[in-house]
Amino acid sequence: MLFLYQGSTSVCSVKVRVVLAEKQLEYGGEILDLQRGDQHRPDYVKLNPNAVVPTLVHDGNVIIESTLIIEYLEDAFPEPVLMPAAPQNRWQARLFMKKIDDYLHSACSTITFATANRRVLLKRTPEELEQHIAKIPNPDYRERQRLSIAHGLAAPHVAQAVRQYDKYIGDMEEALKHAPYLAGADYSLADAAATPYIFRAEALGMDGLWSERRPNVGLWYDRVRARPSFKAAVIDPISEADRDRFNVPREETWAKVTEILGIS
Ligand SMILES: N[C@@H](CCC(=O)N[C@@H](CS)C(=O)NCC(=O)O)C(=O)O
Image (cartoon, rainbow, N blue to C red; front, side, top):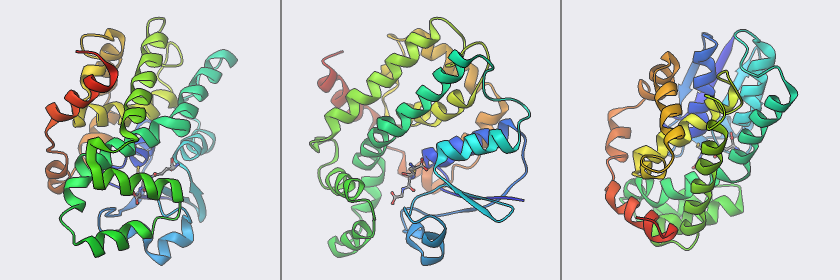
């Protein structure tokens, strides 16, 4: 039996849900309210000491880290195959996933906290907010969240986050000039992993990073959105509260992005 502890919009959770949907696997689950701080519940931290989602439990085995979870799913449930056969393409798929773990995820969370999450979190008293932030075990992540919430898009680390997002999408464009999917002719774990980050960029007003300037990313996104897994894993789990949280002034984000990148 598969059970997924997840967030409704959490990019790492969406990544896992896309793979579960692609493999048409049945699973149970619990949606944790990350704004309320469910990820710090003692029973949850016993499963995931990093106090983050997602966590997969498969027949009693606890599996954490979203990239490793989707690789685990590929090993445990090989059909349909979501890794290419050729070593070069397998490396390419892994490289796209590694870059998410190395920097895109942190860039995405910086920009999300500086925009959508900030609006919700700033409704709390300073004491409540501090209590929420102080529980984050990773000191770097804690400090980035604190700065994003305090300063929004003016936070000092936002510029680097925007450049990293732009770099990743630029790398996607290069790969997609030669093949329809990130690691070659067929859809793979790399496409599933990148999907929530492109969806998030669009939600926050950064779709100008590909529309007009990176046509192959736009075509890839059309292909990904047309797959049944997109509706099941990305769109359907979004709640009314999530829609409200992501109802951000997209033009402000784009103005900041163009200022940082020096584009128009
Ligand atoms: N490297 C982890 C990162 C997980 C992560 O950062 N999850 C976010 C949601 S996408 C989270 O749970 N954040 C909790 C918080 O903000 O306190 C993974 O890939 O699973």
